[in-house]
Image (cartoon, rainbow, N blue to C red; front, side, top):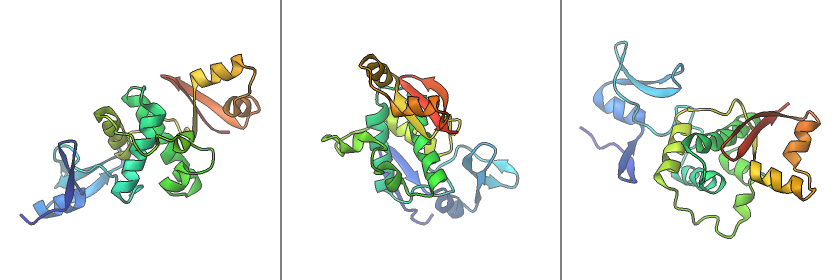
Length: 191
């Protein structure tokens, strides 16, 4: 078999689905129903998907994936895997709604305050965060279209201090819709 480009991370080997399937003589396609890439031979799907980046190519380089993991780490490191996936989903939803790149969404002024922290750029995401980001990249979406989220404890602290939280005031004014709470995050979408 020919050499297939890929990379190793956390003891796992990642290769592009199309490269791997072509080398094996199969045809790769996007399974729209399950929202994952799949290798087809005749009409049967063989095994698990082998790629960590979906067919829409939301992210084009390892640096973008590392940046996404960094943001999910700092924004949701105390959340379960589903909560971390939802934070990544919010970023993807903003990309889809705005037509902006991952970097443009993440570094948009005021969008993610973690990028202004002195420790930003130093995270070593754990396996749960890596798995959550990979799941989001593969199409897992629990966000219900959310484009914003805020810490529930942050909302409670602000309210106790008499300060206004933009997300809550926008929801009260009808500019945002409160979707659901998960862990310590409240999720919103534009009205």
